[in-house]
Image (cartoon, rainbow, N blue to C red):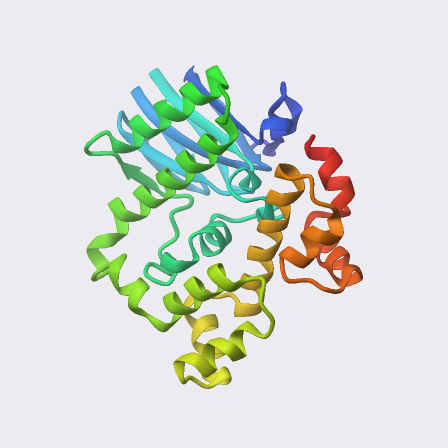
Length: 290
């Protein structure tokens, strides 16, 4: 067996800048390879034998799958095989996802309110079937945005990818999840997430939330981590960094003002947290995004 090759999104065209690429392709046989990005592939016609992480299946029209970072796959015995290929880095969805290297972590972070409902049922590296064309239609809309690149296309990429991920979860896991979306909003974890999203600028948020809602801090901390896989402090940090990114690229505020507006009075601490997450200073990030 030949050694797998590794494909990097930045090796071709301007993908490194856009963080996403969407193609309509006629696909022949492809040797075993791995990716340093996510690939969402949707079969639009023909057939092929698809081997993904050692599992071999017949790929047919309407099948789709999300290949994880490092996922290994190949196509053989292709016949009139066509597909939509969506290749993307996770930071296209959320800037704070730089460094995210698995679909499980991707969903845990950007869809944290719903993650607990299907934990243990990863959407990566498995084949699904689009019975009503919903996923195909969304991918075609994403392809149009990629081709035309009208004003605001980056935000459309983000919204469409999130919609696709939610639809995959809804189509394939809701039969095992009672009140999939409703119950999350009523849970204490849902309440805390909403509280953090609204009051992220404030100090001692967890203490304040517990005091206002009559919970103990150890209990809330434990429940939040059990149900989301992430400490509440980490979720707060990501929300603050997301807001900082939005202000750095979308306002004329000075870095010190941005830090304060995101809940950081200590500039040195703000720079440290920002640099740890994005591997560059806030000023470097602002220049990089211009």
